[in-house]
Image (cartoon, rainbow, N blue to C red; front, side, top):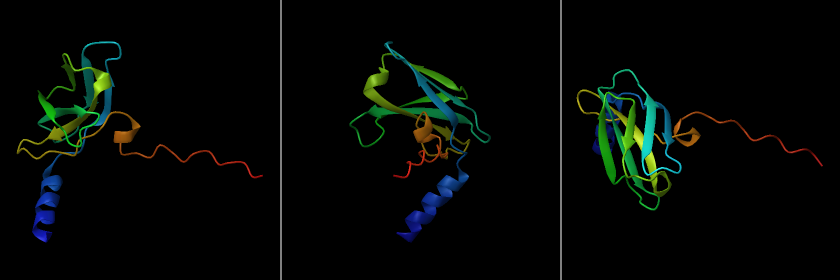
Length: 116
């Protein structure tokens, strides 16, 4: 198990940072547009999507060095979306979901409740 963990850590260590600012658009449209900000060290990006009931990513499309990809015929309501950055050597960052859930930043603590 230790060897597997070392290999996984090395792969993540060689991967570029995860993309930033991932957003999706496509409400009331037959297509979905995924956008993100470029990150240093990325030779390209891969857009991932899966059914809302699927436990693993089932579809992907290579976007090259673009920071936007339109997925024709992929309806925004039926899938989860994500983007990963890929190095020139093929190492891939973790997939980032659009919005605060995938931004890896704290959204803040909820407001304190008033004392009774």
